[in-house]
Image (cartoon, rainbow, N blue to C red):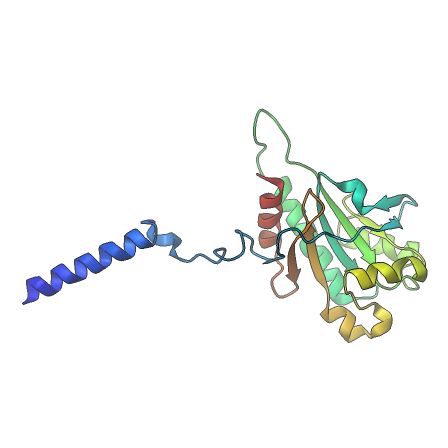
Length: 210
């Protein structure tokens, strides 16, 4: 009787290994339904609404002009603690990517563009923006975009972002980091509870095709 039970258990174990891909440790597959992303994946083909705003350097920046790059898009305010945390996590992801080895024949990792879009233009003075970028070590690694209320409101509506004027609690709770693929489509979103430098860098690498 015992040999029969042992044989049945052995067959069951073999089936589990075969159906699981035979790799044992990879049975934990958090990416099975998300295309490999750690963040929340958008359905394929969801376009990121275009906009044109002004950077902290006084340059006009259009999202559509950044096609071919992975864009990290964050709606922030210099008067928002959650936004500072999100910016620090983005900085950490950029550090992770900078430490990655090159691939191909000396080819560098494709450039990732970081856009921080103001949700509080009245508070986001040039001095406040420069201080936040310096505090988060993003002064030369991100563009902080702002404009008039007439310019910003359509962008907030398009991305369903509550501005700081809607209330600090609602605005900070909605802090999200979006990844836009090289083809201009929204691909991944991270809430603060999901966001770490490692998970963000992981998903950026996927979009870069590394």
